[in-house]
Image 1 (cartoon, helix red, strand yellow):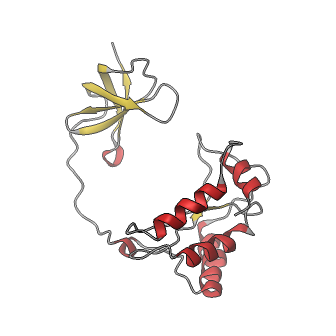
Image 2 (spheres, one colour):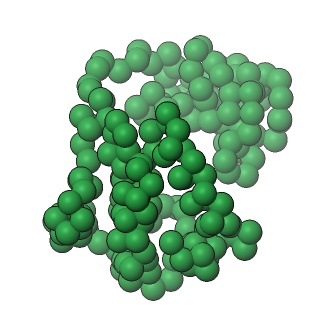
Length: 187
């Protein structure tokens, strides 16, 4: 809820917190269900999380589903790595942090799949095997440099190190874990 901290954490000088708050309120007052999902960064945004909880309650976020989904920071290869951050264990995040906030603000913060109507079903059958070579039709850019998203055999494929921006490219599937297909171009 601090504009300067929000700019610093987003990594861009043009981040407009007031615009985000304005649109969050507009969404909360529409037919759309709004869930606000900040990432908790111990020692960095400790004072901001209670303000975000109060903001979510004030604007009426979460009509059908919970209004907040506070996320635990995890260090990722391609993610931001703020300085001064103290990484927490999952146990500490849930038991020392979220449970105390739930009690203090009378708001559900420890979420389960059932809170969103999510239930287990059988996974989709895999259509491609690891190391299989397939023709993938490129449909758009991915989120990392030289990554494209394509379609093959009815599934989305993330193509790494792809210099081509459109058309069909021969791709070797290097991962198909959890029906998430990742490939690299081949000759």
